[in-house]
Image (cartoon, rainbow, N blue to C red; front, side, top):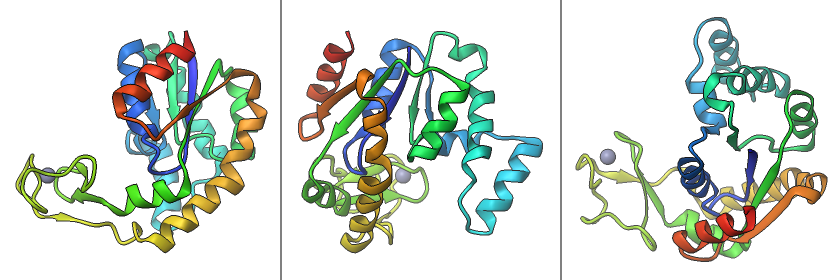
Length: 203
Ligand SMILES: [Zn+2]
């Protein structure tokens, strides 16, 4: 089964995508991981955009994704997280693969802003905490590596609002395209509950 996860920042889409991927024993492919795992010519090409501070063109991302999903571990399916994020990408994706299900995780903007602005993370090991739902044991200190935690500069309410606007304007329209295979789940629930609902609705 080839599945796409879609949801605004703060909806817990990445966490849920990971949980389901483990259950189904298929790879969870996030755009970030996709770029990080590159080598050789493609890596140079992607780095040249990232180093200039520009977005990696949709065509290039699609080409990299095509290679990734042609690998052996994707033969029973995969979960895409972070791609496609606009209609152009969805159109390109259509040319290289068939999507069986799209899971949308919904969350109010107000809640998303609340959740994201209470996030703090560890620079050293990358662990992300939430001061409300998943706080570190010691205040502002990473449980894993005892490093001081920090708040990302772009996790302030104004920047978050902007990202949510982009989500509503550019990513949400994709849902219409996939409406025959779309499953929607309320993201304002406990992690386990959301996972269970996704499982049931995909059955
Ligand atoms: Zn850490």
